[in-house]
Amino acid sequence: MAQVHLTQVPEADAFLSKDPLALLTGMLLDQQFPMERAFAAPYTLAERLGVSELDATEIAAHDPDAFATLFAGPPALHRFPGAMAARVQALARIVRDEYGGDAAALWQTADSGSELLARVRKLPGFGEQKAKIFVALLGKQYGVELGGWREAAGPYGLDGSFRSVADVTGPDSLLKVREFKKQAKAAAKSTN
Image (cartoon, rainbow, N blue to C red; front, side, top):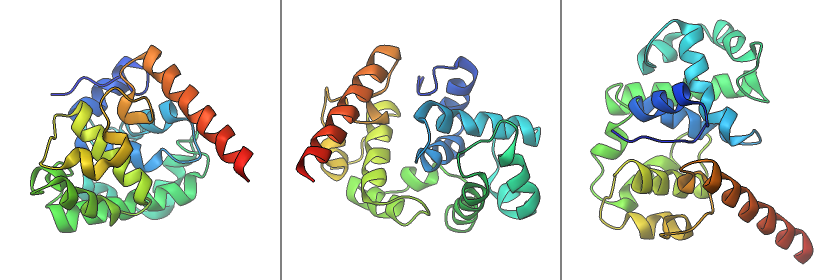
């Protein structure tokens, strides 16, 4: 079992380490929201649901308005709680319908890194970049080293890089990733 340090909150990190749907949900929520809070949100969601692990079938079947209320908090589980609650339910439906309710089957049944990338790209809220980052996260921290995974992950799969959540293993690496993102943003601004 992986021991991740994405949230910097031991209980939330332990939850991500053991619950594949929590990990997938955290990655989905890592958008226009602080990374640590996005990845801690599945733990808080489980607490609000009164469960010890997230269940795709239960989340998919949950009343959408009641589920959005769970996301609204306080505190809110995302900057856009209603929209993200709907996306999490859409994600849960795919996990339920295509992977038998087992989020880990998404990567455990893939034959290659490129197949995994294609599967992740089809998920709601996962564009090309986020899909590559998730493949890198699985490869670097969860031991999901399918053939060609580094190539599928692109620059996020590089060993020793500090580009994304895939490279966060503690407070020091989190600071390095933030600095990389800050520099990348400044470089992008200067070319526009």
